[in-house]
Image (cartoon, rainbow, N blue to C red; front, side):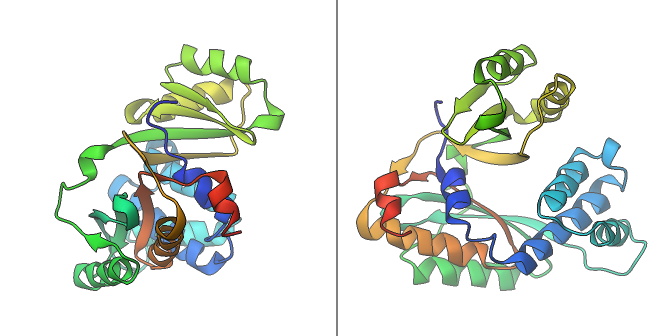
Length: 248
């Protein structure tokens, strides 16, 4: 369980993005287009595209939307070319933030991110100021009620996973970035069907936020994720269940 942030769990419980279906689709379409442009339109030979398509299906995106995004990315239809950009900074309570964006205008995106941070007691930092605190990992999640945890743990470690984290509602299999796809495929072949799978940036240390810092951090995360250009927000903070109940 070492190094595992609860931020991803907090995000899912908050459900901030779930209520913004249109924005979810916008972000997913950008990722599909970019993945297809960089690695081709064959999902079997393009792990990034396959992951993007899986996410789109989880969000119930229509197949036609997915196909159009792939076509645009491959140049079969006119469309924008998005550039990957990472911003680093700090939030309330000194929490480290790593913000991943896909943009067609760096100046606009940097301004939007800086504004969101400054409005919620955060600040934009220089390149490298917090990225050293994060490591790229694969995260494969399973519904705890539908699997035998011991069996999954044994299978996951056997096929090369780094860790298995048991929660009340879900069990997460953590992998090294390079082993993500082989582990996911191997677990599928063993009969384990994940509820979701993603590449994430896991922090090596976490800070616990309480009171006003916790409240401002949740508002900041919402503000950042509400930006069309921002794809993911990675952070190294934790908020207790008791503290979270104050904002429910």
